[in-house]
Structures are given as structure tokens and as C-alpha cells.
Length: 142
Length: 145
Image 1: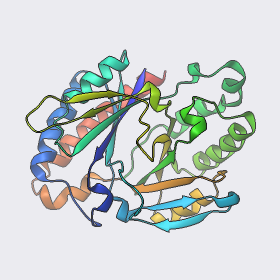
Image 2 (image 1 turned 120 degrees about the vertical axis):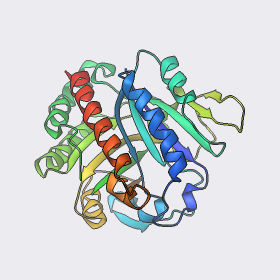
Image 3 (image 1 turned 120 degrees about the horizontal axis):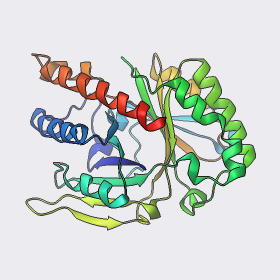
């Protein structure tokens, strides 16, 4: 089963555009990333620029409305994620606990929906999605 | 550039309700457009927070685990896409065409290893990350088979 570990760093909701993580913290995190890799559990990982460089689109009555970041009402925001392949939620939590997190950071562990989680009629309606994912190939950007 | 598009949870997704057929069909069409345009890199739905956990880190203490649901959180995630686009503007244009009703969706640019160039003069960090990604992609492909 796949789990997403969402890193939620307190204060990132008000970080300035162009804010970069501290080099020492990155080095510690890189070691942790390598341990995930060596255990064969790491599927994907990314860091996100602060919300001040992002945007939100809301759909009041189905019509899109764009709001530029930062988002003053947000109390906590995602700073990055890992996608891992493990045998249980407990194993996912054990991995999250090993992260070199600071006291301002929380990791949220969430299970990813698999096609097998859906009842037959929903699985049928969503059948094309697995093919789409295969086509998109999880290719990386530049 | 790559962007992550974060779709928020609502009462229905938090209750574990699955999208109806009409929503799935509309979203399927939108996903197909994204793939055909070469924009779609990944997309997943996330189960309700009641099936998840949070790990909080202390200073010099062991991490503390809290089981879901996270009722105090105002903004939980129910799914995401990773898109390959030329600009934030292009990402916003794509998102405006998504078949959503009365919800708010967030777009965030993703850090690329080249963003770290100023604090990585030797390129060592970038090389390590490239290796990590190449290996993860292989595992990813195997996991999907």
C-alpha cells in the first residue's frame, strides 16, 4: 500500500517568495531520503516553494476565481511530500518518526487510494485512470 | 517547471464517500486532456484523514504520534496532481478548466534541484538527488505493474 507523508512546517504559510531551506537541514534530510531509498520504500518526493509564490483557484457557483498567495487565512500549509510503498500504516508511521524533523514541523501520514479500494461500479467509471497514469509515466520535469 | 495542485478535503471526502459517476466521468475527461497536452505527471486521491496519522517532532524528545481524523485542521488534502507547465499562468489556466464546484484548489511551484544551485556550488547535492529520483522512478514503475 502507498502512503503520502506530508511535511507541514509551521511558519511556512507566511514565508517570503524565494525562501530556501537551510543547507544543514537539507543535508540531514538527504541522508533520511537515502535511507528510504535504500530500504526500497521511496516512490517519489518533492519540496514546494512557499505559498507566496503560488495561487489558489476557487469555484464559486462553478466559475473560477484566482487568488494569489500568500493565503492569509491558512493556518498550516504543505512544504513537501514523500510517496512511500510500505506494508502497513504502522510501517509508514515508523518511517515518519525517523525523519530529522524540527520542533516546528509535523508530518501527516495519509493513505493513497488504490483502484482496488473502489467498489466495482466506481472502479469501472475510473478504469481509464490507471492507463492515463501509465501514459503520464510519472516522468520528471526540468 | 513543475507544479503541485492540491485538492482540498470536504465533509464528503472526510466521511469516506466516493465521487459519483458523473463527477468521475468529468474528471476523467479533464485528466485525458492533461495527458494529451503532456501536462500530467502524476495524480492521486488520498483516503480520509481518519485512516491517517500525524507525527509531531519535539526538541530533544521522541516524536509524538496522533491518530486521525484531524478535526482541528481547517484545510486537509483529498488529492493532488503534479503538472509540467511553462509558467504559473499556464497552470492557472489549466486549473480554471477543471470541473470543480464550490471548492478551492491550490497551485504550488515545486523545487527543482537547480533552485539549490546557490547553496550547492559543487553540484554534489544535485547529483545525489538525481540518483535518488532515477532509482525511485524505477521502483514506481515496478509498483504500478
